[in-house]
Length: 570
Image 1 (cartoon, rainbow, N blue to C red):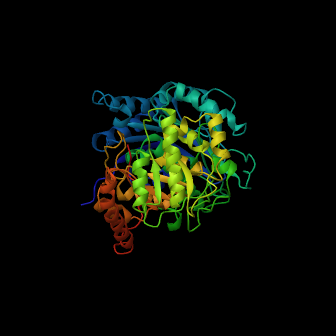
Image 2: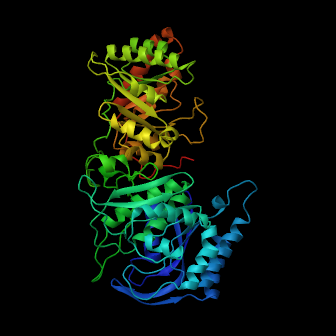
Image 3: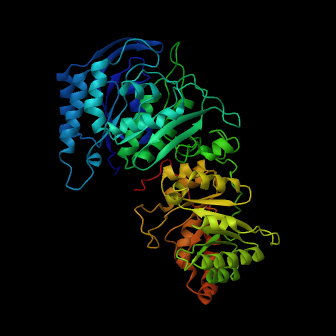
């Protein structure tokens, strides 16, 4: 029996040209596998070259539509588009309040009912006005304080803030615009950049589309190469419906926005002519299946207000139609170990024992050094042993001390030094820290942890040498809020990451290693499963190595495809 899909209501306008409004919303919902209930808030007379007239649906028939659905098909998300009247705005607000009044104590009212607001204040093709000053004031008073995610373009963001509209202006203004909109009550804001004029190519010659993301989970520039897409009618509706659909599937605000970005990008690439003007975009299932299967590439997310390092300093990105999602990393390349094992050790003594078993990819995770001198001794000894063994050595947390280590002139082939940072440590870097890390990028590998789609996008944007996906299984090594990624999400990471992916978290036994090795990651990370002393390691590592080999050999033995969509992580 097929499970019942989540329900999304779209309260929006009917586009007689079939490009935007409820037509685009339906295609986006179908692509995500959610059930859309289309509620007509406005009727339009329009074609591909403009809007001739708009008629807001009177309050009584609009209320009747909402009441009928509420009796049988209550939504998990309401998405609004063209509302057209103050009365419609107020009806939406009342509907949201009624549903959220049933939120259990201590629970998030947005999870009871999310509201995704696409503030459709005008048509991209021009023509009849969609909203006057009274409607814009109603948005500010009734919808923004209730919005889970607000998705304006630059002109709409300015109009909502009672500024002169327009898509131009310096991009540096956008963070302040988003912050001002959040101050009016919207929980998350993404200001889309598809309508913005070109700001010139990146250092490697490509023009980019820049969205500013401001959510409780993440902030930053969400970036992808700009598409030469003449058929773009309905792209804003598709994006907002993509956010609503992904949210209904259980994703957080930031992850829903990443998926909506990918959905819209693929819909733009598949748009077609339908009249003499811009044709409709075409959202379809498979948009997030990965570039190798015809899906959109993962966007890059910047760090703070910086553009992604890979964009500002790196090399040209492969197109979405490339057979591989990869772009050469900004930092020194990581070479996956032959045996596929990545050992994580708490001190030099155990790291030395791991090297003695033949491991050639190791990380020193020395959390609580007794003193700076004790840390330096651990680093010096680990570096010397790794260089002598020709191993790749990552230093966790203590990246400044690792960068200060002198280069090893005498080292066996295969030796390379790297640092590994968690996302919290990455975001805590000061401007001087970032400059120092980037200055060493040609000689230092950078490993970054990722637990969510937005963290994967940020790690990709930083040009990491490797990206850790975790926790793939439940783990007690760290106290984390994340759901286990499992094989499904690990495969999704592998389909989208531009850098080698290593699996981490909860891998304790050879059976665990074999299970996830079958997904073909660059390596699997083992912590406690290595053992607590040299003798235990000598017994454990051969079994882990055999399990890795067996798991890798299972490729092609079962018909398992990369998933079209990841499962939620929080």
